[in-house]
Image 1 (cartoon, rainbow, N blue to C red):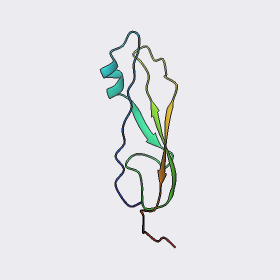
Image 2 (image 1 turned 180 degrees about the vertical axis):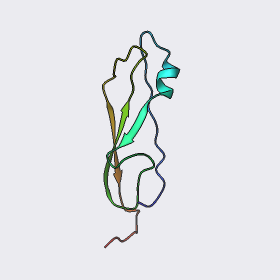
Image 3 (image 1 turned 30 degrees about the horizontal axis):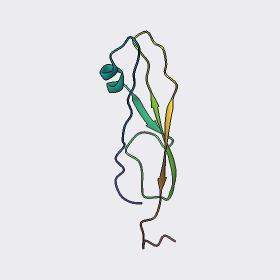
Length: 77
């Protein structure tokens, strides 16, 4: 809690399109809006990853769950 969250990111592959191009074009959003995450409140935040190939085929959305917890010894009323 209160520390910067560094997203691990995601990768995308396709049987036709270049994977580096796809990965560079992944759209990342969260259940709270855009990155960076607000880590000042305890709770759960979802990160969503979306991408489509050159033909416009949308990939299945990938999701990461981030748990924001109090640091050991930290008291939050």
